[in-house]
Every structure is written in C-alpha cells, then in structure tokens.
Length: 347
Image 1 (spheres, rainbow, N blue to C red):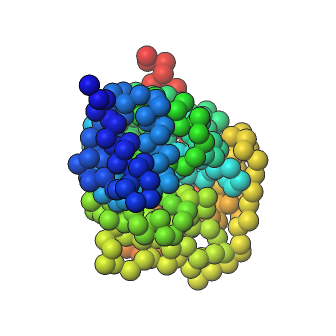
Image 2: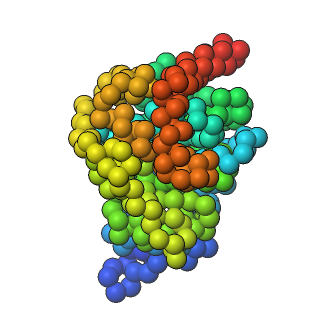
C-alpha cells in the first residue's frame, strides 16, 4: 500500500511542467501527516526542499499553520488585546536580538505581549529571544499553563516550542540536515500559541512578505507584517521601515525614524553571544543612550500603536519612553526573573 504522503511529494516535486501547488486542504493534510510522523524523514526532507524550490503559496501556508496549531498546546491568558510577536525562530546572526527588550517596554507600558520560539533553528541558528531571556536569568522552559498565569500577572511571557509544540520541535534535526530556509520558517511565526488577537510578524524579503499577506489575513485578521532587521520586527533608528496590514487593500504604515525623533542611524552589530545580547538588553532597559536603545524604543512605540494601545505613533513612542525613563521596564525584567524562579521552586 502506498504511503499516504507520497502523492504530496509527487505533487510539488514532479518537475517544472508537472509540479503544482497544493490546495489549502491538501496542505493541511500534508502537514498533519508530517507531524504525526506518517511521513518518513526522507519524505519530509524531500517535500520541504521541493516546496522551497517551487515556492509556497499563501493557501499552502494557511493549511500548514492550521494543521500545526492542532499539534500545539495553546493557551488563552485572561488579558485584553494580547499581542503576539512572530519573530524568526532562527534568531539574529549579526545584529542585536532586541525582541526581549522591546517586549518588556511594551508590557511595562500596559500592553500584554507574548514571545515564542525554539532553539537551534536553521538557517541562521542565531541568537534567539530565548537565548537572551535565559542569559538574563529567566527560565524559558516553562509549562504553557504556567506561562499563561505569568502573562496574566506580569503582562509578558515566552512560550518555548519544545514545551508547547513538541511534535513541531521534533522536526528540528531533519531541518538541520539540509540547512535551508523552508516553509516551516514562516509557519512557526504564525502558530499563535497564546491565541492572541493581534500579531506582528517579521519578514526579510518584501516580495515574499507581500505574497504572504493573504495568508496572514486569514490566520490573523488583525495581523501586521514587518520588513525589519534580519527579517525580524525592529524598526531601525535612522531608517525607514514599512509595515503592512494583513488587509491587502490597506496601505502600509511607513515609519520614518528621523521624523519621529530618531535621526541617528543604528548600525549596531554584535557577535552571536547571548551574554553580549543580554548585556545590550540591560543597557537599553536602564535607558543608556546607545543606538540599539533608539531602535528598541522606536519599535516598542510602533507596536503600542499597532496593538491599539496608543492612538498614534507619537503617543506610542511617548508611552515606551516613559516605560524606560520611569524604570518600569527595568523593574519588570526583575519581576519576570523572580516570578520564573518562584514558579520553578514551586515545582
């Protein structure tokens, strides 16, 4: 009897004239067969690579995400307007990993926020939010239900894929063997493990980002796509950043850093050492005047506006600035560390 997954490998891999895109339903079934391991490692590798060569469609991404979500332990914290930050799971290779600092500013300003990720993801296998959070003394390997309570208490949390999506994370060794970006790099940013009402996901290539807008519209009607640093969500100081709403009929939000009070270019680069990235995070949260602080501050202000917490970019930036200047963001870092240590001690 033919393995049920073979037709999907054949559909995407038959060659230039015979290959075809999968329907949303087929993509959903294919991902289900991957995650329940009906598909063999060889078939999974062949499928992912041929999908990359063919190029994934928005319908395929929607189907993949819908299936992947059914294999996740998803939570629903009792907070209003939770914001999901869909940063690349493969991290940062050259520039500071600012997502934890940005999330702390956003949460300190009163907007609940959740991060999620996984270790050692190709292609970059760079510094991830989890690497930085752990280097700051905060436990990342927490049960999802514990993270839900943390979000309710502190307004911030991090969900670790080995915990909330073990079947998904089990694919990592296969992904590492061919070291290419695949559709999975997009899917994981859209898993929405905390059932957030709003999302901002980062992408690098504008053409790909625009191609994914219909998928984000179906998965996250209140979602935004950011063309940020190394494909993440940051709006760089001294530059122009474009963010696109999921609604394809709506115009992008153009963030002119100089016009918003951040004219000095941020060309920060740092080795892929989580300790150094954590040190930059502490510098930012203690409001030290470094270029990375301005990028983090600008981005936090933008996120506060996109989430509906601030009426305008200017108001969002002022809210983020107050979170730094008042020390609220730095104190939240300490509370987060204390909370996770207490939760770990309690068992």
